Length: 205
Image (cartoon, rainbow, N blue to C red; front, side, top):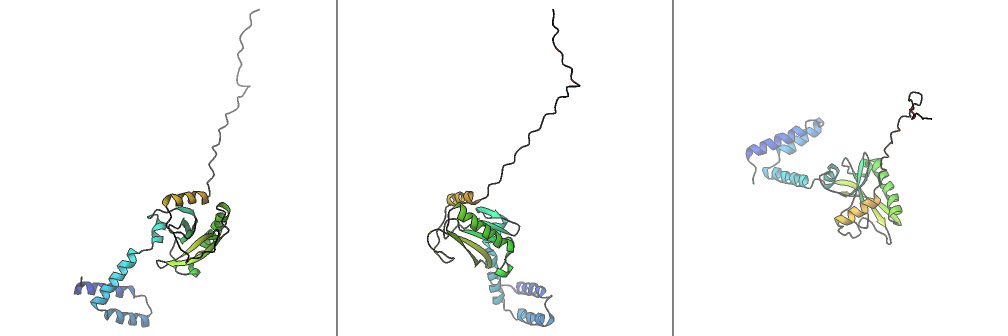
């Protein structure tokens, strides 16, 4: 559906408002580009924006809890979930709580979580080792932990579809079991023998 002149004007006004904080030379250049946009170019831009929002990172939805996932661990900066299309059993992805686009932006605690889980996988699932590799998907960077059991694998190795039951079973094995709280038994107050008079039955001779 073609944009009306009013819609074109409104869109250009929105774009112009977004460049107000640019340096003067760059602002002038950006203004010229915006003013020169045709209705068709604006329509294409809107479609691309809508597509990007639709594809909005599945990772953001996982972090927000809007998509069910098998969480195996987390910390203040990242969350670790089982990959639903794993390369090998217990393939985990570490998702930063805030989106990052490069390894430099990746939080230190995300890598720490990856190392911690790699050790847990080799211990709990008897994997020989675990490959830690970064990957960019949906314009975001994540960390993959790929367990190695018998043959070498990497991020480009074939994948398979894991069942919900399989993922939950693996998650139960990997998760750290929280220690049950031990209820404190309330001690009864000791009886004060000095204040208590013992009444003994009177003996009749």
